[in-house]
Image (cartoon, rainbow, N blue to C red; front, side):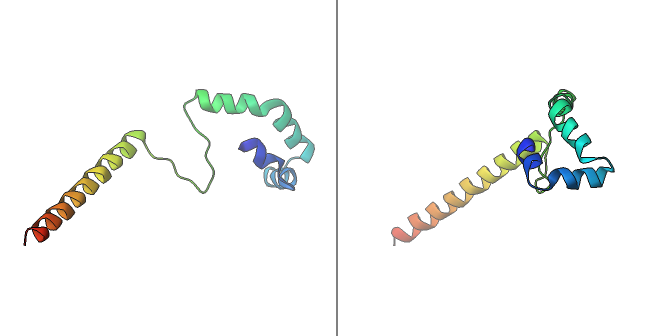
Length: 89
């Protein structure tokens, strides 16, 4: 995903301008150092995600999944209770 983004038209120029370096410097980093930098980031325990996404703690996500599953099961039980009560009349 990162390499795809870096291949987009104008990305090298935009990165160079934002970092205050030449486009050839960006190209060298991309071609010679990017894999090592990403490996370093990963080895340090980090992930790179798109800016439009957010990260959450895995335990928190698991807790939310359990909460949601419990709420869904409760709702289903309520619906079955109403359906069963209505059908008995």
